[in-house]
Length: 114
Image 1 (cartoon, one colour):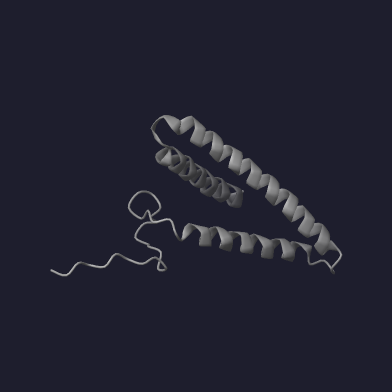
Image 2 (cartoon, rainbow, N blue to C red):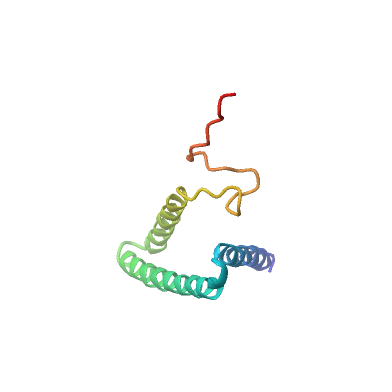
């Protein structure tokens, strides 16, 4: 029961952050369109993930029971790709900043000599 409660709390916070960012980055009168696009993209991603993991699991079932391991490797690869796609987004000051953490791969602006 404790695990389910912890998952529910993390899921709720994550969902609210996503919703906040969708509305925050929407352009003026395009909030409804942005929210609709977000939910459409979310549904397509879930469908692709379900079909992809099903195919990987089916393929892996023939390989001495490594199916779940293959799915975990695919999930890690997907997360790594998502993280790499986030690198070019430079928005530490307006929502993408995680407490005091900054992306070490981003080039920091150079201080102007005085």
